[in-house]
Image 1 (cartoon, rainbow over the protein chains, first blue to last red):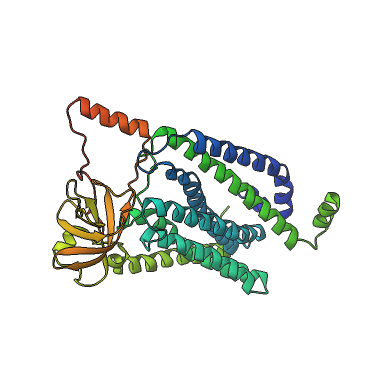
Image 2: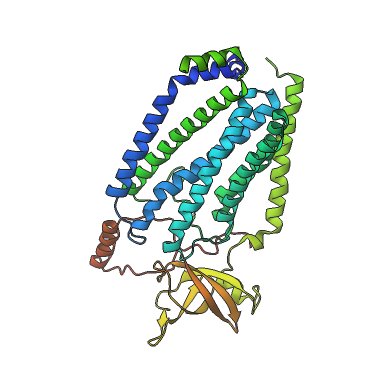
Amino acid sequence: MAWQWFHRLGSPKWFYEKTTAWMPWLLSISLLIIISVSIWALGFAPMDAKQGNSYRIMYLHVPTSIVAMAAYYVMAIAGGIGIIWKMKLSNMVMKVAAPIGAVLTALALFTGAVWGKPTWGTYWVWDARITSVLILLFLYLGVIALQEAFSDQEMADKASAILSLVGTVNIPIIYKSVDWWFTLHQPASIKMTSSSIASEMLYPLLAMIIGFYLFFTWALLSATRSEILQREIKTKWVKQALLQKA
Amino acid sequence: MPMHPVRKQRLMIVLFIVVFASVAVGLMAFALRQNINLFYPPSKLIDGEAPEGVNIRAGGCVVPGSILRSKTDLAVSFAITDGKGDVTVKYTGILPDLFSEGEAAVVNGQMQGGIFMAEQVLAKHDENYTPVEVAEAMADASAKTGTSHQASCDGMDMSGNKNY
């Protein structure tokens, strides 16, 4: 049956038990990549001819920005699945993706401002790219607020899912803003087939992006697992799982 | 196995939300497209499309050889171009480190009698990242072959096909 794996995903218990073994691996591999690539990027990658050492902020700025946008799709798709199939697990993923995405977006904005001051001469400018990323942050904060605004979890999930789905339109706008309008932010350096970054600077960046994706996966699964325990606290299997830990 | 009709209906609702929001925002962005642009390209300033005596931003490539610095104070003047027209910019203050000939800059200020009086000058970085050694090697190579590797505004796509 094609749908069998999908319906099994609907069981929080199955998901919790399945992911237990993955967690330490995901965390250690992602931290190993992030730490070793940080040393590579900060200590060994060559200095940029124009920007000097300040360009190295991109090793934090680019991965956080990319994963912040990917996290939004995770949240919105999970919200959509929650509406269509009334899947509990999917709604939990949507809920926990919001604070993680918000932190990543805030980091992207902060690192961009820190880089903007020495490069552009200003921390902030209201151009299409930066403003649309600020809207992304507000969308994440909106989902967090909606989750807290309802006493009924089902209502909260439905409202958050609708906001998430409406906000998906912002992601292509962020991505294409630098091509559609005049902005201070530069156009994309890494494209599907080519890159305008020298390879000895590019490889650590790509490795860092992989590291951040893995770390995000760990954070998302980890937060989903604690959300499962909270929402299913009255079930027998959760009590047993908690007793086993204690 | 076909989808349950109730779920199919909910799927339609979800798709409707996404499509409706996209169309609404798309139309809004289209209507506001001029306001979303951060700056006017020089050719639009010459055409008189930008208002005089109002705070606006202009952006373009700093024309090589056009930078004139005052010997007594921080006053500086330079021209910016989008390949279709030049505008002279006057500014008094410290320029950002990355400001240079053949690079893009965004200036904030007012048009007064055909001259842009800037209150702020920002350097726009391009999407290229090059190590110091490679940049020097490229400069050396062009010096040896006799082809002068000077800063230039050629090929800088400032006007592009943006929605103006």
